[in-house]
Image (cartoon, rainbow, N blue to C red; front, side, top):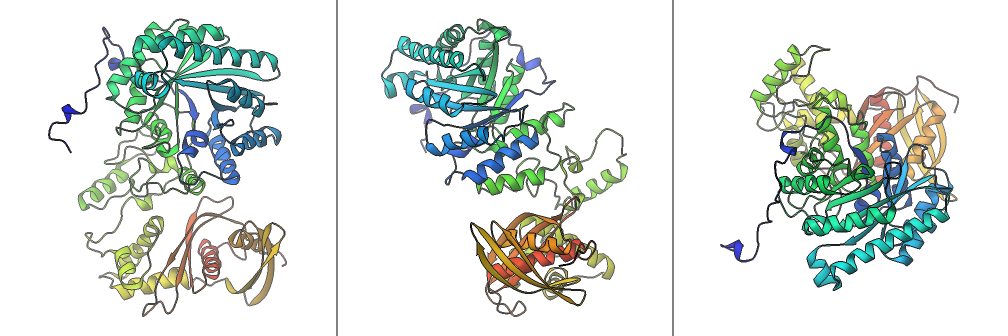
Length: 562
């Protein structure tokens, strides 16, 4: 690093704005939310989502309550084009949800984009071109007039094509890419020209997206830019100002909140901050920040664990354990003083009173989180480091949520028996709780087979002294086993699955694979883990499924004839 960074980098100049209003304002209602998980989020993945994962993400976003979803860049790839067609042709889009697609300000790509949207009930066409000085002079070699002409020509084409296809309700969104690095007077010139070309009216609004394509200044500067545009835009009553913050400086959430105070109407971002480079603004954090201030976000995260697991499955990316509101450790206290304060807070908290608990800005129950994860045991707690001992002594590396669950079992054991638990005691309790959970249903053997494109399983189990041979098909061995168990009236959902390689140990035998499966009984909010060990990972997975069934205690209650 340079000792004098000013020789290479310059501070962003402040915005000349008189009597700015945003510092004294509060956010009193939710903005219009637009998820770009399937476009900006997807294009940022090392391995973009396949069709199945994209569809699962789309349905998750709809379930959360997003009414505007940017689903693709259809002119960029056949894969994206086909996904838009599938959404429309197979009628996956709820009546109250509008899909959005992105296209550069180029004629051929705009026409291709409209082809992808044929038959849509309502669609937002999002057009963009770069407007900042570095892009004008270095990347494209264009004058200001040429940049404006390019944007206007694109908008006129969108208007023409929308008029030629009246069966769809069309909405235009325009982004001056690199807005925050564009001279404000020029950004205003481009946006006004675009609004005029679209003939924006109160009943025919245009979305003007003002992105921090790359975050280059402090959030207050972005707020000043938004308020300046809000004050000076022509046809303001015919415009929705949208924010699209990125997190290059780590302040995207703050930039979005201050931008809303400055006059914006809409926010674009991704679940858990996914997106290019350091990510888009995190819509979950934004929404729950509103919630903790008594403002309904109009998004439902009452089962935030399910949203998180779907996100991790679709993106193949883990959520950081310290991530606001959803991380595995955010409702956790290791410190003794913190634990004491939280316990006293729970004792004093009345059911219908305003929330007022030390160290907890939100009630975990509102997000479907358990109080069991609030107080945890670690190596400094006086009860031993449970996870640490299992890993170092027996090679078992537990997922974080299993650490929470099993720590509660250790806590119950020590409360009943007193004294300290050694590593062997902890291993014995772990084995008893998970590996030996063989009643009332136990695994005997299995055989896999192919059934067309599906995976089939012939599963032999014992239940209450009787042997049952069950068959099922699914998209893999686990899914097939889940379907097979339905023959016994056992209906459950797999919420998460992880596997670990492990070497032989003095107590764990010669097991080389350990499977961890988080399951939930259908129609029941209770979740728990099952664990299986075997030299074969598929067998370990099925044993983990059986372990979860027995720990949920759902086997044998609604038994059907096999």
